[in-house]
Amino acid sequence: MTITYDEDFGSLMFRWRGSLWKAVLKDLIAFYIAYYIILFAQWYLLEEQQKEYFTGWIIWCEIGSQYIPLSFLLGFFVAVVVARWWEQFNYVSWPDKMMMMVAANIAGPEHLQVRKTIARWSSLQSAIAWSGISERTLKRFPTDRHLVESKLMTEEEFDIYTNLEAPHGKWFVPTMWIINLLKNLHQRKVIDSIQLDMLLKQVFSFRDGFAMLYVYDWIKIPLVYTQVVAIATYGYFIICLLGRQPKIDEKSMQKEITIMFPIFTTFQMLFYIGWLKVGQYLMNPFGTDDDDFELNYIIDRNTYIAKMMADELADQLPSNISHELNVILPHTRASFKIHDIIPKSALADYKFSNNDMQLIKPEELEEREHQKNHRARLGMLMRAIDRKKKSNANGNPEAAHLTEHSPSPTDPAFTSV
Image (cartoon, rainbow, N blue to C red):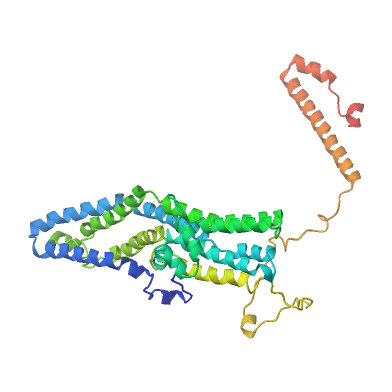
């Protein structure tokens, strides 16, 4: 997370920290060393007949490398890891909403110390909880005494905290102190039941983030799958050490171009090994790698914001609140040069003809229904006449009987239709 970039794409290729080059350099150098050792042995230590035999091994390894589904394995692995990585960041707890609710419901200078205490305990909660999962935070607060020296914990709180017997962890103790303080305020009628309920909901939401990060730290991606991906990737390039060797026997050199540098294999290493390294780095985002979460900065930021909301901003209000809002906001010359595209509906330009926009009256509907029934009855009559004619042509007596009872176009029943 420490790697930020906003320059153009070309300059990004020359970055080192957190870059592809830093991730794959050691593996690439090791591959080149092994590759050229084999090439040297093939060139100088083998006789012509042995080179032909070695060419058979090259072809065999080249064919065998095609049976490793490396793209599928790496693609699925990285997709799972990246999704898990982003979900973990979303569970990083921020005290902003909780402190806004505290400032709104526990207002007034007489409750300033209460708000400050809740703000301090929220930072203490972060320091204790994240020390159990983040290497960066653990190095900052290696013992409980460091919490006292950083003024996140008082001596009295230190004695209470250290004397607690908690075989399953006690990272949630500061949250319980906040809840007990809110209970005390409710008992003293400083806040009512509705306010207590709103405050507790924010406290519970703040606590849930720490709990979920402990779950992610406990339940890892299955080891067998990470081993499969690692073995498939490195096994593929071990096979490539032979399969991508140039064929230097006389017969092969007469038929093929001999290139001594593995150009396309180098590209594959950059892509596949780089892909694998991305997954490995993001599996544990609470370490000290370049792209790991900077929880120490988040603790500093949250401490400052929580204190500011509890103290300076809790009862701050501008005196003039009757100023009118100007709906046409000005531009600078720089922003005015950027043409904004105003969004519009996909059917904004849809046009109707005048006839399509006319309303249908109820009497028109009745007339159309009458005409529809008339056409249906007429169709039935014409089909009956057709069947009569076909029956007369075939000499069918039963059809002749039907003919006698079938109306003709001149009959009154026909004309009434």
